[in-house]
Length: 282
Image 1: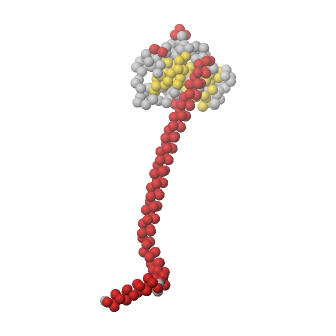
Image 2 (image 1 turned 90 degrees about the vertical axis):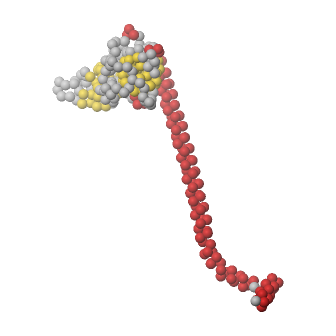
Image 3 (image 1 turned 60 degrees about the horizontal axis):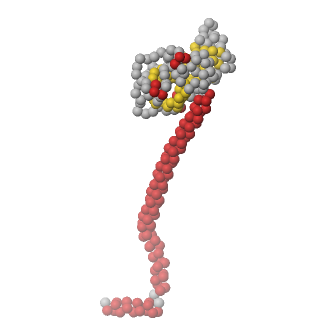
């Protein structure tokens, strides 16, 4: 042991002052370096996977934030677009009001009635605002319908597709006069009592004739979408769709016709105005 201790001290002294073991250490380092790197691989792999997982988590978090911002921006854009459309509709109503000789009042659609046998809506204007049964209802697109029931603050409007409503119209292209009547399906409107040889084509737009004394003449009413030529001695079957689509309506214009000029209202259903639904119909 003493000899080993003395030898170790001698080697340490020689290496410290003479550098005799430096080549040996360099050689051993070169031999052991690959082994050292191989032994460090598990540690490096753990560090790499940890960093990769951190990057993935950061990317997922950023993606979530970006998607949330996109949804918020989309909602704001949709609200902006809805406000723009409403403003455009209101401007159109204001321009239309200037062309109407009678007094008018703007109203907003509150909801659609629940009655499956009629096509009607309820507006937020009633007898307190001057609205009465029989008043025609229009918008910038054309004829919407006619008021059939009123309460102090609301009114029920029969749409063109309601089977109780009939509106006299004519075709400007040929001057043909006829009567439009709702089919009750919420979409189609029928043209009644047309001449057998009437020249009506798909795409023709019929306008109010003004013969009823209610609707101003020249307002778009319906657009022909199907023409079925009948046999000899039979009237042709012509169906059309309203120009003013209720699905895109929000504001309408009620024409306050003098009561003396209003003919008998359309067929009435003896029922109160239904309560609004939970969501407003747009």
